[in-house]
Amino acid sequence: MVLQLNIQVKDVNPAKQRTLIVSEQSTFEELHLYLQTAFAWSDEHLHFFSQNGISIVPQAGDLLEQTGAVDEKTTILTDFLKNPGDKLTCIYDLNVDWQHEIILEQKVELPMDLPLPFCLAAEGNKSLEKGFEDTYTFSDNEELVEYINHQLSVFYEDWLLGEEEAEEIEPDESEWNQLFDVSDQVKEKQPWLEIQDNQFIAVWSDRINDYVYCSIMGNAEESYGVSGFLGSRGLLSYLDMLDDDPFDDDLAVLFTQYSLTVNFNSREELNEDEYDLIKSLNRKYRGENQWPSFTSMIPDTVPWSFNQEESLIFTEVLSKLESFLSRTDNLSSIAPSFDSGEILALNKEGEQIILSTIDLIEKAVQDPGLELNLSEIEWKRMKNKIDKINGVEAELAFIQAGEPVQRTPESRPFLPYILVLLDRQTGAVLHYDLVDSIYYSEGVQEKIFQLFEKIEALPQAVHMFDDFFATQAEPLFDKLSLPLVKTEELHGVTQFIQMMEEDNPF
Image 1 (cartoon, rainbow, N blue to C red):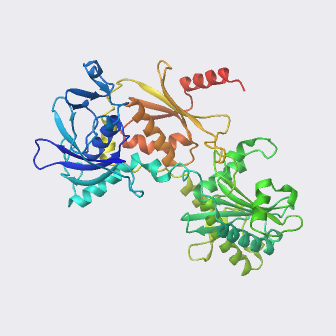
Image 2 (tube, one colour; image 1 turned 90 degrees about the horizontal axis):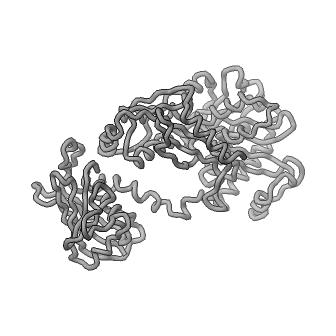
Image 3 (cartoon, rainbow, N blue to C red; image 1 turned 30 degrees about the vertical axis):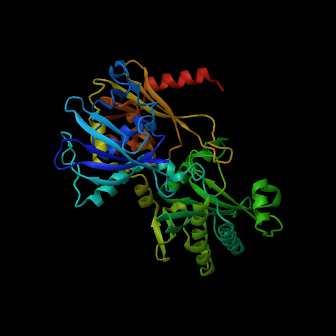
């Protein structure tokens, strides 16, 4: 069951109201967040709910000291909204006393295609809070409802994915067969007889809107296949591989690559899952270097089987590569080596061109942009927290944990990071959390933003190691007008790492 609530801010002209559909199991703490989002409040002031002399309050100030007060964190809506017509009052900003009248209009079954919370109707698009009056304006209420639901989507992101859908989707039988077919066609061309693995062929992929840099393996007669390094990030991961000592038995190279690979193996080299897949597709292979196996390499994760999107990307790339090989003679003479500073490429139109590796690398390492898609209200809310811990300079770091973890037995293992924030002067830990593997700008920016949301404060300045994470985070700090100091040494973080190693020497 869901609750359809009509919420109106009292004594304002023009009228300001919202109709929200929420889960009957929502807590009052969750309802407070929905109201803050739907009405464009800043969440900078105290609030409480009340009904018939009973207050439902946050764990803030001395509100819980009141007689008859209950905690909004553990109290659900149906404890107070039982029947259509039941009412509540919510007061936001105890100085101004904005009063919201909340009426339960009806209880209904949840439509299967409806995310929660959901705004059904809205009126009044101007924020009432000082400093936020001109945050947004819309031509009509329909446009306002669309915007509110976009803002509410942060609460139902997990619902959209669903617990099962959060797992990576595997290719279906048809998609697997297409991938095997085109891999077999490339194998039949035996391109490794003409080209070495450092003579790249860059193939434009419409699915990733970037090049996939293909390295063809087999000229050395050790392993046969094609590795496609995905986009700019994939190209940088290849450069990381070049920097590694080939005689150094360092598994770190496994956790830096961003590539998709097909290897043509012998039967005994396949693992059980790879062999079972080939059998299930009723495909026949015999002999050495004939059996295809597919490996996805994503930074900070364990090598894994292709998911659906990866299979579609690689099918597209191998199809274009096979077509190029079919119509091209003297491949070795037209494909420069990577060391020469040039790469043979097939552009968007399928035309054969030469790319400059210098230009590609400059593009790949250019300063990242701000990738968080947040409203100006959310940015203002965060900026308003900057004075809450005056004078505190902090150290922030992403520290990679030593062992891969899995969310479920079937999910892809990843190397998590510990995101830690410390008081730079005292070394005291202000906050730490275990976060997913991060290999793109949006992920770094999102995790840091979420950290500040959790502690509900911003330091005066943040010090970070001068590394990938600081570079990716810099646009976020610029947007928040929060000084970021890049440095080679963080004493507090170093001590934190030492403490972790002492507690877990293995």
